[in-house]
Image (cartoon, rainbow, N blue to C red; front, side, top):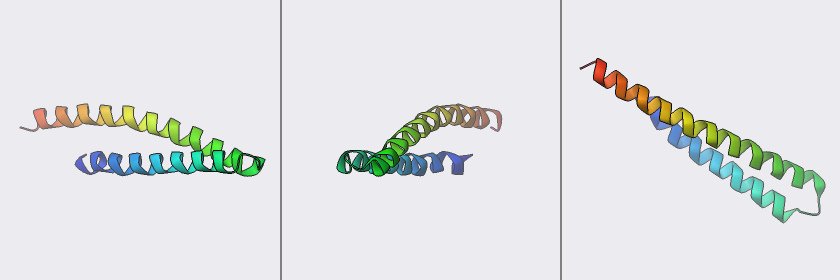
Length: 72
């Protein structure tokens, strides 16, 4: 479970990077609908995944706390 909790940090960085790439594509290529669409899709996907990862990390922290309490 400790490994999973450490991986949440990596997931967060990757999702933030994808959101930044999406924002860059969306605004840099505003006149090209293909790249603007890819950018918008990346923004939406990364935002959703970042939100879900946040709640999963909170649940994981509670579960890890429970495991530490039970396994003493």
